[in-house]
Amino acid sequence: MTLPDLHLVDLTLVAWLEYASVLVFALTGALVASRQQLDLVGFVFIAALTAVGGGTLRDLLLGRDPVFWVARPEFVAIASAAALVVFFTAHLLESRYRALLWLDACALAVAVPAGVGVTMALGHGPIVVLIMGVATGSFGGLMRDVVCNEVPLLLKQGELYLTAAFCGAGASLIAVALGWPGTPALLACAAVTFCLRAGSLAFGWKLPVYKSRPPRV
Image (cartoon, rainbow, N blue to C red; front, side, top):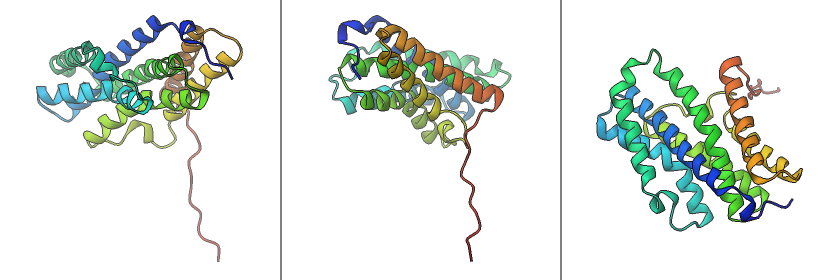
């Protein structure tokens, strides 16, 4: 499979996806901080960790120097501003957990194509693109939940989370294989990721889970 050359990947779209990912993931981190009743510094820390965690892991694994938020510190400023907004408004939400779930679904749907786009632009092959898309979308939320001592959303029994990220990244590779340019491929990635995750939340779509059986005598 031939991936798009650098000039065929819309780097402006990738940049906007990264900004959106940082903003929405920061909001989810701040919501988790509100559930844990942390102070303002705790809000900012958890929001920033969630916002840049997945992209940082991606850039370190790809040897990208400097890491994206070091090159553009405004990402940390955006995460901090989101934390401040949630600190003063979270009490207005009827259900912070439901807001968290849907914001996280939106964040996943922009972070996965952001990771895919960055990896494509660096010229990596399909397997690396697939893995980096999933990592960018899922590891910030995983860090958030582990640090806050909550059950990670991506490990909830049978729910389509990692599956949604995997299928979204896979959809972009299929689109490229069909000859689509980089931009429509990334939009297809976002659409597939969100639809699967939203379907899991709204309609209870799940994967079958392992059920143990009594040992044979």
